[in-house]
Length: 132
Length: 132
DNA sequence: GTACAAGCTGGAGTTCACTCCAAGTCAAGG
DNA sequence: CCTTGACTTGGAGTGAACTCCAGCTTGTAC
Image (cartoon, rainbow over all chains, first blue to last red; front, side, top):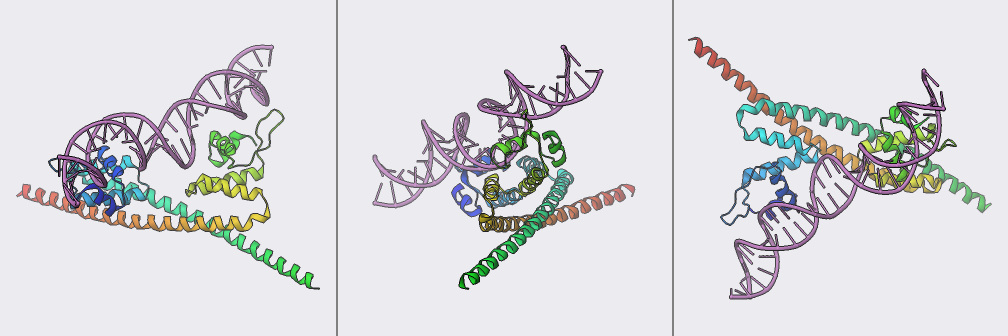
């Protein structure tokens, strides 16, 4: 599978895929003899994982550390778990913060709805007055 | 109230407060005759609002548009409501996305927990073997 | 009244995460 | 074979949102 196909499949630009590899966020991908990247299923999965975690705002640095630990094998499992637990906690806090803001927005919208209603009523009253 | 106090109170740096004012995200604050900013309750509220919306990732550009409309008075109420509704929708989508990722993280952590458990068991078994 | 902390301005610098570019190599169709 | 489009690299550029700085003025404590 070549880079353009992975890009299409995963919704990640080819530039970004190369960038991720360069900074060590994706382990080096196999190449054809002429040097063109040839992604396999495992690569696909790793790309999807990174994409998913990035979509939740996990910093690239943390993910680099994580994939570095994966590369070091089983003995780093505990450290990886700790990273995941920490990021989970941060994500939960973030979601809770966003939900609060969502509530505030909902409230503000409700207030605007009331205002719009009153303006409409005012308008209707004026219509009536004009008819008199 | 001077800038350092507002900064303290709202958890927004003085630099950021000046920056927000410069780009029109906060309406110009009253000054003492010598030119030093003197924030009033209304300013405080506006700062809190901006801080709150920014914390949820609403883009500065959108907020500038919004506060611009507020400055234009009642006739822009409907437009403001539309902005809020749109941003509410975006925020909701974002939260839903984050919740999905949270679920994935939870699942991954659970898998790691199983692994850690197995490693511990292995360890215990080896201990037993050594005792034999 | 003299330090010195805090305020001001315009502009430059920083960080994060890409994104684009130039210049060269490679592969498939006609 | 030759064109055309996709791939390669290293490095430069971008955009969002601050953050810092130099050089100046102002307010406060002793």
